[in-house]
Image (cartoon, rainbow, N blue to C red; front, side, top):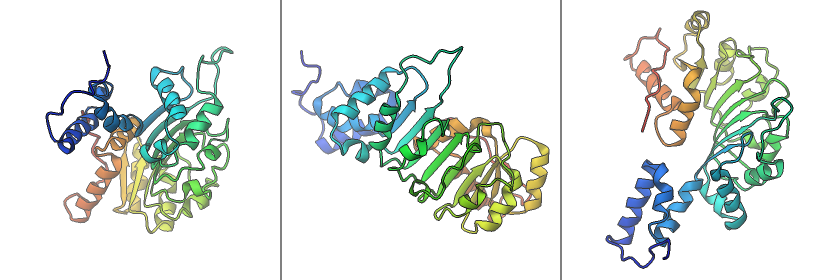
Length: 295
């Protein structure tokens, strides 16, 4: 028996059937594997959606998804991933537990192949170690417009002058070394300030707020992630409607919402600032409402 019921007659016109299945797959991505088995024509329509949003946890033992992704990298036409893949959630840590490496993790060669095959990524979240392998150089084919980095960013210069950063409009920076507030003296600020497209910036960095606001006139949103009263008092002194306060605790889940097309911190911050400029929110209010879980 053929797994794909290719000889079944469509019940609807092809255009409508295509739209129905595509909408179902987008709204309920967990059912995509089931939809792929309906018919060969459905497979052709829906399979690319499996690879639009890539999740790669390179420090963990490979899952079935990772094996399928590697097979697709080897078997698909060279233009498949550049044309299909748009969002990526990438984690990469180089560590050992009691002298033992995690078994069957992504090799450097496999990771390099994936990253070089996905130049069309526009929304990238990276969590982990940027420097154990030259990850920024492996990302050199990408030109993301939305970029979030949770990494050891204070260890070495990131190279904000590289082409990889030049189209970034929305940027989040978090340091995993425990340097929660980078401060106005961080040596890499001058490079950040020269990013030509940056309009939205999120950092756990109250101390650098005045510098960023003064030197980035094109900045429309500055999200400051703080959880203490002292930081909030500093923000009150800035008196700038572009500033909002958010909690970093929900950041990863919030990013995931945005990557799946829901209202993320940027959308909510823009709406908050717009209402504030209209006088619907008090000038002294900076706290952004928490994210709303989406199905």
